[in-house]
Image 1: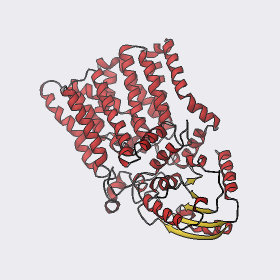
Image 2: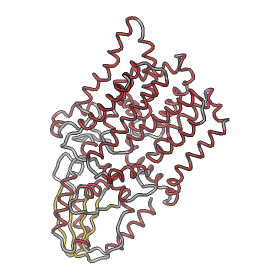
Image 3: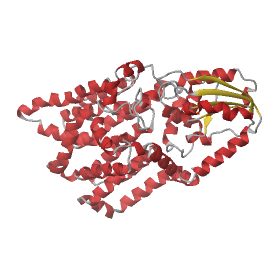
Image 4: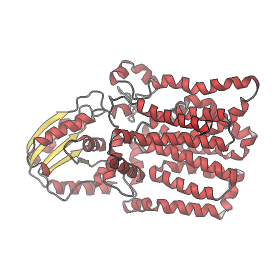
Length: 507
């Protein structure tokens, strides 16, 4: 085993270790994770919320036992592979050992540590961006058509994971047109590669067509409820925070792509990031959508700095360059990860607020960062629903109806009674069991609906009770109510069918 390989394996091992150490046992799974895991029970070529690839990974996790270890393993794996691809890119750009260590350090001690904590499409999205940029480097270097075909496969995987990968093409294609690489559009192989990519993603496109393209409804809803609160200045400011320890390296890459002679043929990467960021700004994208851009620029910057710092007294700056990402990570370690108790965060809220970490998607500040609040209260919810369910007669005729996908997914994951909760929210809209009659109803109502639930629903049942509330004040679901209704006076199944039809028409 060579020295380089040993060092690379060391970085990958440290990556896995950190991902498991940065998550306190106080926290549970995050809201989105429950939905993604539940998709394994409803495999399809598409979903209302995400493309299908995450569900395939969830199915593998389920086969492995559905343990927390495997749920956290896959995002950590994608993060480790991102380090590996950046390492290989540096090698292709003729970087030395210093460049390799600098690049790996910058990628390791970055916001990817937080991204890779959660089982969401974002980790594979960042890896997909990095792989596609790496393939573009390989093509520019060799002009071998095989890299176009490999790129088509990589794009298809990225697309089937998260549609966000389209923004990469929005940046790359005009960059090709304004540089000497525009000749690629005269190569028939490009169009064959595009056809290959379309064939790979066709099943998902067909699913979208058959379901009236819910992705557009999802984007519209996202724009109205979340993206409307996105401030473009904050978007740009947060780009600096994601890789704050690597800013010198990243900005060095911009200079190198314009003026460093060995990188002259890669100049399109300078224009690509501009076009991509402009597109993100135009669409009021969330700041983290752009994280996948930067790892490849760390590769360019590391190689350039290794050349600048190779001679004379400058070589003594090499250890400092490597130390900077690590040193700047230390204060970030204390605020950006769910490794502190909720009580600690509340007591030290000022430093969290100063960094904007307490601001949620509603544009308001709260007690905890939104992701952290979304990792609390779920076990309590499942336990109380299980308890309410055990007290019922005709248990097999019970419907558990939740206000949102997080509640439904958490109950399904943590339940000890093998319950199958559903919701009219997200993909659960398609997962109702309409093959049986229902006599009992357990509803999970968000805080805003707790006070009116008994008043609105009780008249349709013989008995109605409030079985419990979520009491964890730090949970986003704090105050959520669990209601039990028995002895239905109406046809619950027909009401469900009517509501589903109305929702789908709206979608």
